[in-house]
Length: 497
Image (cartoon, rainbow, N blue to C red; front, side, top):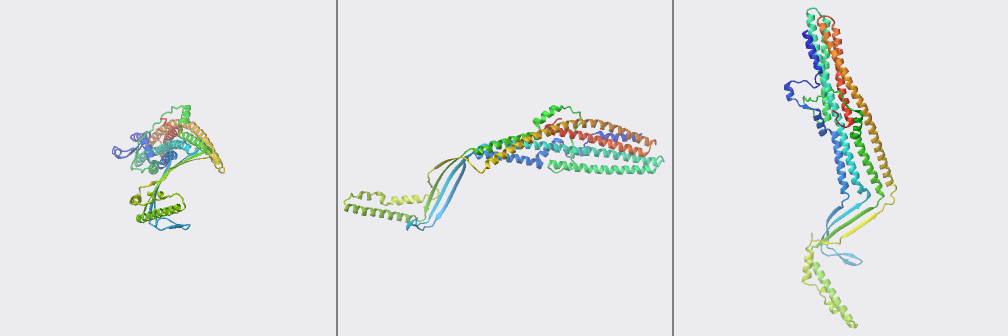
């Protein structure tokens, strides 16, 4: 009788939490992981989810650029040149300085162009940013569903491992009982060997399920995007409660809140703006341009230039007096007063001024006139390229609308089927729980009858197999219920419990 009580106590452990049983010392040092913590870690580290964040950053940069296009393009230049002091000849005339010349030119220019395309660009990029944010929300929902599903896989593996531990303990106790009965002649050696086989099979099942736990944990932390710590313990407990949900409310909420539908609608809005931008290609373009520039130069031998200027003015003055003498001889009025003009005389002040002008290099610039220009261009014909872009934009808009409708139909189907699957899963849990209780009682009865010699060991083996199958079905039903809940939450777009 004592054996039967112990067996029942061991079997009752299968109804406990699916988390791994650990000693108090182990629980204090082992890292723990709740479902919400797992989702938070995945949001920070999952590579595929982070790619969605990168897409949003690119959309934000494109929006800033679209506003920047409306601002003037400002450019500046600064150049320096050197010319050898050698005269140049053109048409038999000598030009240029005989002194080496270093010169500098600088300019600042501004240009801006306004067309229908760049005026519409901020609205287009704003719509693309909204679509990228909706895609990020949808990616977050997909990630949450994936992490939740894998978290449930680990919990299910742990529950199956706990069941196998219990079956192993029961098989070992049955082996000890068979050996004790065989020692007093109440059982045969065949019963002992069968019990040994049962123990061996239970050990193999425990070994495989423990390995399955580690495999599922590795897959979980792959979803999280981090390395798996040792002896991590999952702490979230999900009770099985009767769903109290209204199908019509779920459908209404899904149409408003489902991230995939919201993302599709955002893409449709962005495609509408692209169509408007394509139509703006028929509008004129206004271009404005202005700039300011200046130059400065320096001759390496300014004294030669001064001497040349002095000789040139002296020659001009002498020529003027020669012309005046000819005019007087011809009886014309004298221009001697004009020939005495100080401008025809080169003084020391003129030489000092030339030296001062030559010393302005390199940053004292002589400014050129400021220029302004405005151009208004009208597009007439460009080989039907505008028409092609407009048709492509309209086709993409139609595809976006079809995608919205497809997402709405998909979500409607998922909510309806998810709701029915959830109710079915709950009923299945209730039935499988009853089956497990009956199988547990049948196993305890078979073990007690075998102890008193009222049945054979084969009956015990059959009862244990029935219990194992019933308990496995109960565990599977429980986690199918939780998966159905998670699937329905993903379709609706928000938590439901």
